[in-house]
Length: 593
Image 1: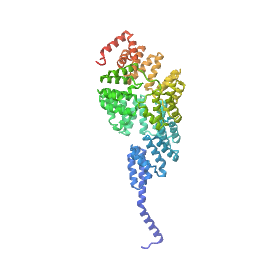
Image 2: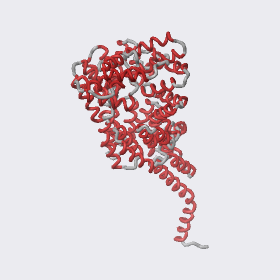
Image 3: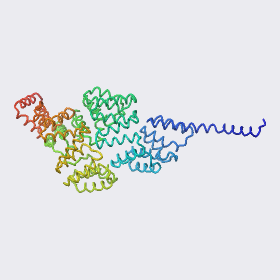
Image 4: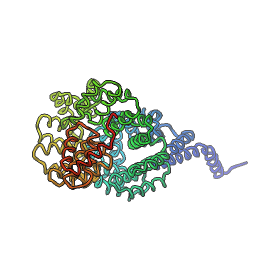
C-alpha cells in the first residue's frame, strides 16, 4: 500500500498508540488502585487498602510510590513488623514523603520508640508544616510522652490549621475531659459528630462519656447506632456490657461481651469487667487470668488489684495469693483489704506468726503520707531505666517516687528538679515536684506544682493531694471549691463524693454526708470498712435507718479497726440500735467458725 504523507503520519501515530497501550493502561490501573487504597484507608479498611496496593504494585506501580500508604494499611491492621518493612528505610516518592515520615512516626509511637517517633514527625513537619493531621499525631506523641501541656498546644495548632479535622476535635475534647471533666468534653464531642455523625471513634468516646455521667439511656442509643453501623465493633458491645453490669444484670453483661470477640479482651475496661464477671460466676481461674494480665499492664489500677487479690483468695489455694502479693504487702501504704486477705492466707497456711503483723497494720488503717505513691518495681530497675533516659518523665518520675518512698528526699528532689527543667510540659513532672515540696513542708510550692499538673489532668490521686495541701495550708475554701467543681462536671466521681461527704460531716450536714456515702456503698464500696463505719456514723447523726447494719458491716470487714469499733460504740449508745446491732451480730456466723 502506498501512503500519502498525511496517511503515513496517521499510521505512525496509530502504531505508536498501539505500542504504548499496555504501558499506559498499566499506569492507569496502578493509579486507580492507589486511589482505591486511599479511599479504603479513609474509611478505616486497612485490609482492602493492602489488597489494592499489592495489585497496584503488580500493575507497575513503583515501590516508593506506594510505601507510605502500604505502611499505613499494615499499621491499621496492627502488623507492625511488616509495616516497618515498608516504612523503616524512609524511601518514599517525593510527593509521598511527608505522609511516609508521618506513618513511620506513628509506627515508632505504637512501639513506644518515642525519640524515633519524634524524629520522624520532625522530618514530616519540614515537608508539610501545615498538615493538620500531622499535628494531631504530634499531640498524641506529646501526650504519650507525658508532655501534656505540649500536647494541648499541638492539638490547638491542628485545629487552627483545619477546624473540621475530626481527629483534632476528638483529641481536644479528650484533653478538655482530662482538665475540666466529663461535662466540659461533651460540646467538643458533639461538635465533632455534627461534622461526621457516623464516625465510630467519636461515637465511642461520646457513649463512654455519657455513661460516666450516668446518662444510661442516651449511652444506649449511641451504642446501638454504633452496632447498626458496625455490628462487630468491640467497643460498642463492651460499653453495653458495662451498662448491664451497672444494673446488676451480670448474665446480660456476659452475653454482651460475647459478640465483642477476643479483640475486646485487649481493652482495659473489658478486661476488668470480664474478670469481675468471672469472679461473680465463681470461675476463679479465669478471673485470675484476666485480672492478672490487667494488673501487669496497669500496676497502679487499685480496683483491678483488689479484685485480683479477692479472686486469688477465693481459689482455695493460699499459696497463690502469697506468691503474688506476699512481697508487696511488706511495703507501707498497702490497703487494709489486701493486708487482711494476705494475712488470712498466711493463717490458712499455718503461718500465724506472719499473719499477726499484717492484721495489726490492717486494724491501724495506716496509709502513706500525702505525696508518697508506691512503685512496685525494684529501685535498681527504676534506676537503670532513669540512667538510660534521664530526660524522659516516664523513666524519671517512677524512680523519684521510689526514692521518696524510701526516705531519700534529697535524691528525689534532685531528680524532680532535673525532670521539671527538662520536661516542664509534663503534668507528671509537675505533680512530682509538688510531692517533693509537700514532704519538705513547702505547702505553697506543693499547691503550685499540683495546680500546674491539674491544669492538664486532675486525676483522683492528684485531687486528694491537692485537697490535702490546701487544707494543711489553711485554704479549706479552695479545697471545697475544687471538690465542688469536680462534682459539677463529673457527678459520679467517687473520690470527689467521698471528700464532699467529709466536708459535709465537718459542717454537721449529716444528711448530705449520709446520702453521698450511701450511694458509694450501694455502687461498689460496701467492702470498704472505713466507708461503712462513716456511713454508720452519718446515718446515726442524721436520724436515718440502717446505722446498725452499716456498723456491723464495718466490724465484720475489720473487727479490730479503730473506725469500726468507734462506729459500733456510737451506735450502741442508742438502746434500740444497740439491740439491732446485737441481733445482727448473733445472726451472722463469726469469722473462722
